[in-house]
Length: 219
Image 1 (cartoon, one colour):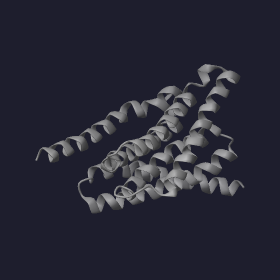
Image 2: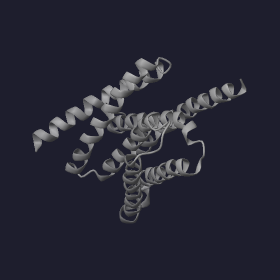
Image 3: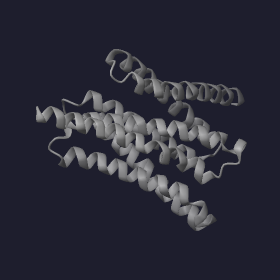
Image 4: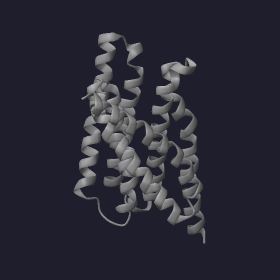
């Protein structure tokens, strides 16, 4: 068991560093489709490895919050990647299954936060409650968008950009949380800081796609 944990931890950390490096390059080469596609596939594969190693490590170390966060982050990877596949077609069973699993995981995270609040004080429940509420909202909004927006197929790029960048924020957050003790950074800053800094980047990139659509329609 110790060797399994050691190997899994090593793989998890090494792939994590690779993913952190790949993120900026994916943005840098976003207009070069072939290079961007290669970087993107490696990124998704890397995030999958991170997710698969995080699951047993979270259970072995009994870090249940990190288990839920793994689902939270990997959901963004899945729907960001799947947006490229179903942009001109209908969702498959796999897409609904992804939403179902993510919805259950995020709802469990929300319940976990409530449990922490009642058991250990609400000051200790802030972070799981924030991520739990956000996770439930993200899944619900994604399903609602597909079911009730007539032009979902025109939003595939927004879904792709928003969620892949969102998953990168998750990777950065994992890094800051693990390194925060070296600089005495408060937990709340380590967990929320990357989102506060990087979410505007997501908004900016999505706004660019809207501007491009407006320009095209104007022509």
